[in-house]
Length: 166
Length: 205
Image 1: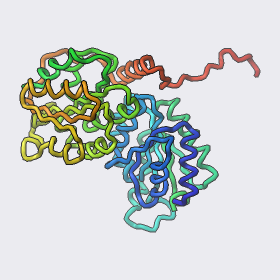
Image 2: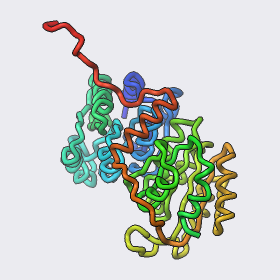
Image 3: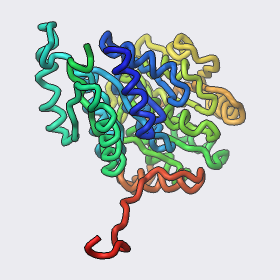
Image 4: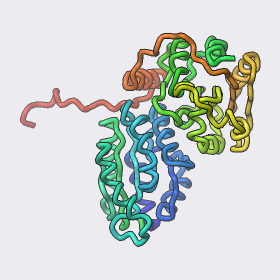
């Protein structure tokens, strides 16, 4: 991810009121994770496994924070039970920013299956999501996804495609 | 010692502490002993420690207590590393270790073998780790943690067996609303956003 894209995401999250972010890094998310770690207005929690981050974000929401989770799609697939039991069942929102490996533009053959499964699993879980690649679309999508997460009290997702990640 | 005896010993010392309970009988036992809007009964095996961490970080002025189990923590050992690194001084992580999956008919967990969760917590960076094998040790360790301003990990080595208490009559949504409304009132926060009303707007506008 280019530094200007990472900076735009951090700025957009803050403008949307997000003040707490859990992350699990990956090469394409590195600049975003480092920028979140350096930001003074956002509490950053690097986690060891993505479903742990979903639990932390849910707890932070109950305590009055406005949380988001940054991870790759492999981590989203790992988090499905946590999202179902901790977020969707009781009605707890968390904004997810999901890096989409294995999508269009992917050069690594090993990511193709995870890439193909990501959107069907989001749909199966009835999680509303938007796919974003262009810099100019980031701010409004982060704002609107966060508005829906909070009003619906459900997780929402922004799927960052290769255009945003590379 | 049994888990219920441990909970009964410490329940009178609770005031406005926030509690996250693990899936299983512990939620019913705790709700019977301390019915309170500050109890959150998690319906997930594994994320009790993580949920409690999120709460503790969000509300650093409130004491947060997690009542976790060995089967649950074994699903989420990495959370110990995250908690130790975040080091919330208002969190007490209690693990009732009965060395089995009690709610799933009692097959042994890894702690029935060689695994020692207190050693894992210490290895992950917890500075205050207590292993208790008697009720007196547990009560003393917990009360020390409760009166301190430090992160604690308390392992209670217990016998399997649940107390004969009524089921906690709270479903997850009800529990969430009561808990969140309690936090909003006691912390003067607005967590649940309200839908804007258009009733007062003139027609045709």
